[in-house]
Length: 58
Image 1 (cartoon, rainbow, N blue to C red):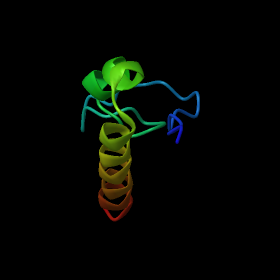
Image 2: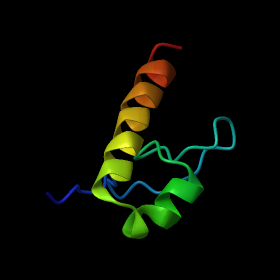
Image 3: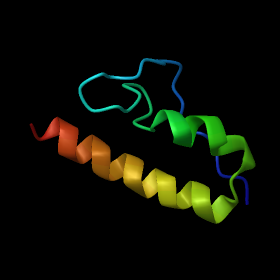
Image 4: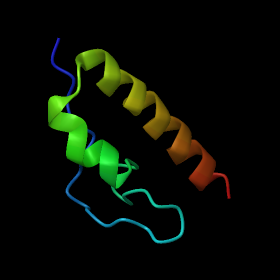
């Protein structure tokens, strides 16, 4: 199964929370995405979802 990148083309790392404001991944997660297994990508996508929820609730 191909796990697609959550990138939406809004590539800006927030100095406040250190995640991309478009996809909510860290710089490390973005740079390693291409080499990760599908399972690792799914784990990051779960983190991304949680980050979105946490940041939106503020």
